[in-house]
Image (cartoon, rainbow, N blue to C red; front, side, top):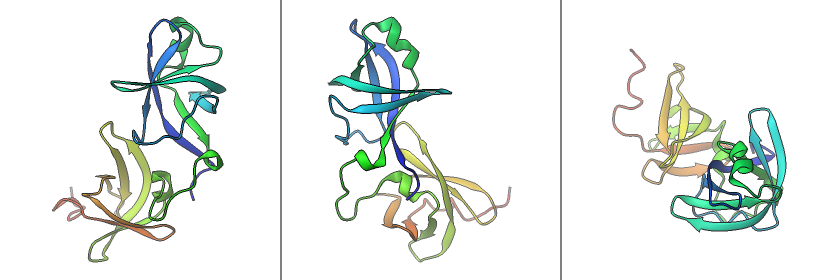
Length: 173
């Protein structure tokens, strides 16, 4: 497993007059956050542990309110910060579930078993998470981490991808 902290998403713009801030979760279906939970908020070299005092669903994500941030002016300092929690604080996974962070370092194969490369990182692509696959020829290829392309996961071993035709065919410029 790749990290002791799990990044849940990013903070956006301030919202409202009481210190709310928009939160864009990496997994919109997740219910990992709760009122009273302490999360790590990191922006560049500034890392803080903050308690969530309110959570609301809003059109473009969630609105979080943190203890000690009661005005729009104060909470603006958190814009673009990453929100994370200790991995141990997350609920247990169901069978056939995994965290995207667990895919880093796994071999990527196509459905015939051909090795395509190694997953080196994940990228928040807005609409979906992208897997960066480094091919044997050191080319970087981005593949959406959605069911249409990500066909299977064997934790500790490999992922099975169904890339669009031509994506991995040539490493020549």
